[in-house]
Amino acid sequence: MTDITQNLKIVRDKIAQAMERSPYANDVTLIAVTKNHGIEAMREAIDDQITVIGENRVQEAESKYDVLDRDVSWHLIGHLQSNKAKKAVRLFDLIHSVDSLALAEAINKAAALEGKRQDILLQVNVAQDENKFGLEAEEMMSVAKEVCKMSNVRLCGLMTIAPFYEDCELARPAFRKLRELYQELKDARLEGSDIRYLSMGMTHDFVVAVEEGANLIRVGTGIFGAREY
Image (cartoon, rainbow, N blue to C red; front, side, top):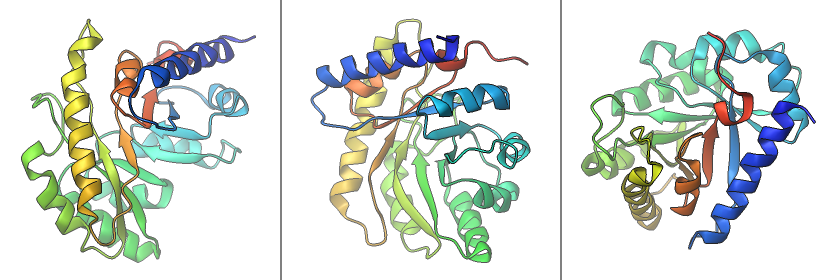
């Protein structure tokens, strides 16, 4: 058994245990975050039933996209600049990191040119961490309503990146807050939306995120080990 196979087993076991403790009946999708990891490692993970790849940067995803030779969904989880929206729309099935109305508008325009309806999540900075991108919690709904008027994007849920805490329990309030916003968004039944994804939790805190209702978690180091820079 390789390190990646062993690591995936550990992560999946932790997910299953967290789901048992969670009051939310979620099917959790594990996104393998492949930033700074090579094609062979990606293939190995996919061959062990990983179905979603998460990339932080458009340029790196572009360099891997045509050579990976595997049927997999591509998610953009890192910050996106508006001037790279066209390439992002071409490459990614889901963009997690839409952190402004202006970016949503750029994606909508790019998707129209591609003849595509682009699935997106709104990134919310629920912890008000000055080092993180994202909408303020109070503006999420007003931005969501504007996004749902756009014909070439489809709003599918919310995403956050919690601050890094040595004690991952400290991230729980942020995850709980995003879950509340997600439910509010779901209950609003905005025309043109399809609210089904709650993306939160990474290698160090995904267990808490799953307990708080995440159904997309983003794990890189926990699968592949330390990144090669």
